[in-house]
Amino acid sequence: MDTLKIKKVNKGTNLSDKLICFVENFSWEDVKYHMLGELQTWTFTDWETPFAAIVNDQIVGIAYIRKEDYYPLPEIYPWVSGIFVAEDYRGHRISEKLIFFANEYAKKNGFDKTYIPSIHVGLYEKYGYRYLRDIVNYGNGTDRLYVKEI
Image (cartoon, rainbow, N blue to C red; front, side, top):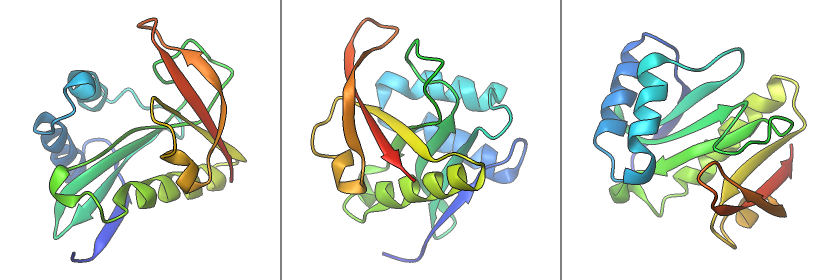
């Protein structure tokens, strides 16, 4: 694989337009339209932001750092969420690099931990996260909450 770059995406830039196009065409149907709305109306405030994984000037992955996620838990933040890597680029540790970049960004912004919600067991533990507890999302489903000290 060619050189991977992770970049913070800023509102109204060529990169934000490319990120919108990437999300329009990706296969994660459950969240595609929600994520598109967030990017198109730029719902990010303060330190919140999306990140793009880029190979050969092409976006191949995305992640967010947010104050809120799909959970009624305003006391828990920042969330690392919306992590997605295009199928052709999986297996190259791009998710890990996106998460690492998001954690470095969070640390620079004064945070000492981040949270990731997931249904997966054994995935985020590889990146230093530990299971905290089960949480209920706005759709009334149960997910696992992971935390990492950064």
